[in-house]
Each structure stands twice: as C-alpha cells, then as structure tokens.
Length: 111
Length: 113
Image (cartoon, rainbow over all chains, first blue to last red; front, side):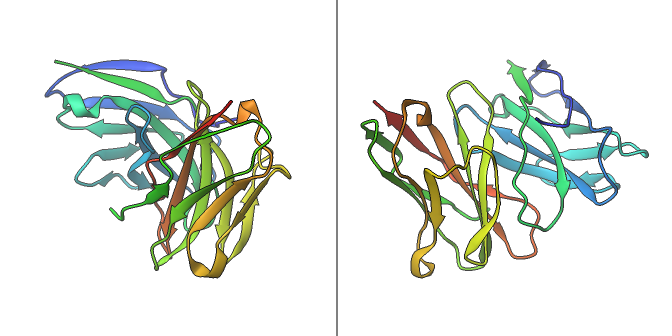
C-alpha cells in the first residue's frame, strides 16, 4: 500500500495558487519526494521531485518541511487544465524501482 | 519531455487468448516499466526492466505475464492467457540513464470479453 497520506479531494479557483499537502512520515534519508499527476485516463505525468531543499520548475514548486515528514506541491496560478489527480510518492532516486501510487488528491479547478 | 509511444491504443480480446502490448523505446532510456490501472482504481506497478532483464516485479506480475525487449527493439508485455480481470489500462514508462523521473506513455486499453 502507498505510504503517503493525501486529502482525497480539493477545490481551487482558477488563477489562484493550489496548495496540495502530503504526509510521508516514514520517508528515509535517501528517498526523494516525487509528485505526478494524471489527467482523466491519460498516463501519469511527472511534475517535480526533491530530497530536502525546496524546488521549483516551470510547472510547480515543492516545499519540503525540515524534518522531511511532509511536503506541499504548489501550482502558482491554477488553470482549468490543472484539474487532475495528484500523487505524492517517495522512493530512492536513480534506480529501477517502480512507483507505488496511492489514491492521490483529486484537484478540481473551478472557473 | 521525451515522447513515449504505445501500441495498440485499444485491444479487444477473448478470454484465454494471448495479447502483446508494445512500447517504443528511446535510445538513451535504459529503464522500462509496466503499470496497469483497472477502471476507477489506482495505478499499480507490474514490473521494471533494466539492462535487458527484470529488475523488480510486483505480486501482480505472475507467471501469465512476461516482458522482453527483443533485439533492442520494442519493449513488450505479454499476457499469455487473458482473464476478465486483466481488463485495464496498461501504461509503459521509461527513465533515462541517470535520471529520476519516469515518462509514461498514453496507455493501451485492454478489454477482455
């Protein structure tokens, strides 16, 4: 079973920042936090990952707490196309390990 | 983002038949994965493949499943004798050498009648 905890659903107004929380209290020191999303029935899409520092890319920002037991994915200006299920996953980086998906958070962007 | 291609997009088969799902490789990708998603359920890991052999497999990946990359060409998932419960979306994923993120294909929808 997935080892992360996420709220099952969230709403956010279009144009606002969407903040998606995740708890991963059993994460080990060499495991990275990854975020993926799945729009409708498409293949999951990588968003961002981090180890302990906050990270930002063209899609999102990732804020990881100092104790690394939780993180927040931030979509700075949500659009209707960001409506999707968002998955928080942790695993070792760089290897051949498969991803363990949970149920994720269904983010609904409201017009 | 590297494009990941899967064929066919939709496969309909009779129970007990063999099916082969294909994933088109990119030369600098060494890691390959298969996942499945039964309708309305979560994405489940099946198997990872590295350096032309299975690296990790889940409990779902039993003897009816096999993977191969014949002659460095397409990466395939074979289901020997399909069951009704094999109906699902099957996603191929790939990862670059030294990379962290997995890139997923659009999936093959398998319907077993």
